[in-house]
Amino acid sequence: MCGIIGFTGNCDAKEVLIYGLKTLEYRGYDSAGIAFFADGKIKTVKTVGKVDILADKVATEVFDATECGIGHTRWATHGGVTEVNSHPHTAGRVTLIHNGIIENYQKLQEELEKQGRKPVSQTDTEIAALVFDSIYNGDPYETIRKGCEKLEGAYGFCIMFADRPGEIYAIRNGSPLVATLSDKGAVIASDMVALIKYSKDYFVLPEHMIAKLTKDAVEVTDLKGNEVKPEMLHVNWDIAAARKGGYDYFMLKEIHEQPQAISKTISPRIKDGMPDFTSDGIDDSLFKDLSRIIIVGCGTAMHAGLVGRELIEKFARIQVNVEIASEFRYADPILDEKTLVIAISQSGETADTKAAIEIAKKSGSKTLSIVNVKGSSIARESDYVLYTHAGPEIAVASTKAYTVQLSAMYLLAFKLGYINGKLSKEAVKGLVSCLRKVPSDLEQILKYDKQIETISNILTKAEDLFFIGRGLDYTLSCEGSLKLKEISYIHSEAYAAGELKHGTISLITDNIPVIAIATQKHVIQKTISNVKECRSRGANVILITNEGESVDPALCDHQITIPKMDDRFAPFSVAVIVQYLAYYTSVHRGLNVDQPRNLAKSVTVE
Ligand code: M6R
Image (cartoon, rainbow, N blue to C red; front, top):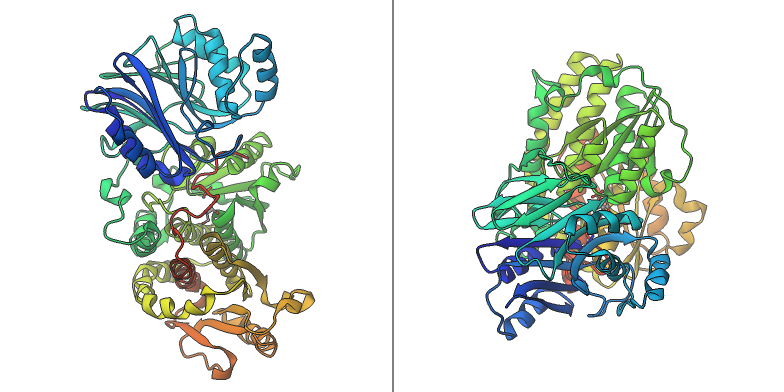
């Protein structure tokens, strides 16, 4: 949520900032702005709309060369989408950018107004700038320390002081900030994608520590002024991974990256044909003596948890609950030391999922996270972390992050089944070899693009539609429905196929599209009966089922078949099909697939 970048070095900061904001735009895209030192003074340029508009605006003015500045791309929380509410915000000698929410901003505003300090915007961020300016006495460290003592909420700040050209200060509580030093200078940002052009080595700014960036150093100190050496991290992807690489949209590129991402995620965790997490620092004791497993996550990550539940209950016979993280954190959950809480998150920064893990830890439960972004907050907060290797996911709609999460859940379920005596070694080896085949199966499914592009024409004009399925097919219906509504803006609901007749079937009328997923052998005929019920009420049916399944052609308008396989592994193929359906529907409707309205990639606020 919100993209932040700061740069000080030996090339034009404006260019570095605009480039960085373009890479970060998926974190928020309703307005953008930069502030930089030029001619000894801080200049600010802001605009409503995308970074390209900001770039044009910057290009129309002639500024002196500048080597230090900060930039921001906004996802509005407090205050509407206006230029005055855009970041950076300036109060006196302080200019800053912010990612997060200052919860006590109203109280602070009242205090500030009594001192005659009035904000010009409606944002909580400007209040923070006013707080810092009210304290500033020429000492940035004291100002930041005392200012942060007054602030409640989540924040990642990059701050410039008018009398300290060439210097950027940063601090965070909750919201992410990563930094690096390269031969071009020092860079700090909310996400590694903005740094990769300069270095593959970086560090996560530890919470409540202050980073000072100058052109040839990044110094980190704690709030008492002691020097801190943060752990350096390395990314194993390069700049090409963060570019579209000839695809029209990042989402399409990321759909195509799935076979490779799954291979990268599972291969290092298979030894002698068995799942093995020792390179993750996880030994088998974690999987013993568990009374229950709780999986927490949001959106697509939570849907990966639904698949995880089916698998773990099937293979390991351990009770699993899947909880929406934003509900779990306020639900007073029953937790103990025999409960394993698994958090799933692509970004590793989702505020609700992070809070869920914190609650689990406080209650004495063991915590394991499945996370894509190295060094992220959820990864660091958990007792154990299993990193997925999807590389950077830029499209707001999650695709490859979901299927790598599934691949990790399969390995975990096999491991749990084996350790708890529910699966023999031979059985696990057989399952692992099926999982190893998934990337090549997906290469086949990726060739369905033209067929699905044509089929999705029947969805383009729909106002409402339904996904139905049972068991694993139901979990894929949930994901397909979310994906489609997220980027096509068509109202869509996912239903357990057998539940329709308990109310929702009254919404099935002539030409309502119903996407029925029927790949799970033990319930196919049951789902087909539900399809018949929809068909006889006039629905347009798209049926996703297995090759060779005999289906009355009158039952559906379109049938998409997946190659014959062990149906327990069908979710991967179905995932690609529903991703394509969402993608092409959005394209046909002329929408911005990668940046759907009102959304942002990483949700670091409640
Ligand atoms: O970064 P996370 O995996 O924690 O994000 C969770 C959700 O916000 C995310 O999956 C969201 O639902 C996607 N945009 C769906 O495509």
